[in-house]
Length: 114
Picture 1 (cartoon, rainbow, N blue to C red):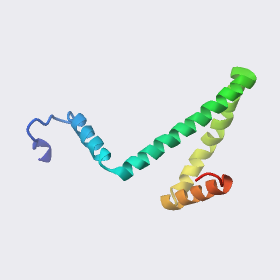
Picture 2: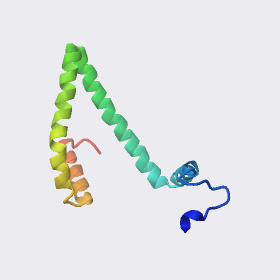
Picture 3: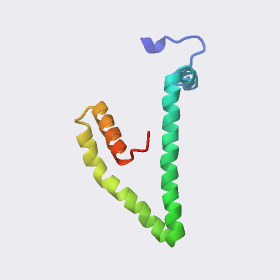
Picture 4: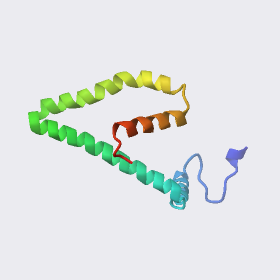
């Protein structure tokens, strides 16, 4: 069996996950295109959280914890209600089509963004 064949020094049943992780990170470090995508994703997530926190801080400064809580609920409930339906509809489409449509829609809403 293939599971019985091990390289010298290799541990049993997933014990070498650290070595696999190191190999994955080294592969990533050598791939400039993937690093660019990763950097863009990190920047997007930071901007997304910054907007979320800024809205909550602003709401808190205007009306306290109750208003900040209402703002948080107002942002989360529509997403929780729409997400299951949107996910089932999205599964029927091509991911490329959905990404292009989302980018087109974003571009129409905020034409100053790249």
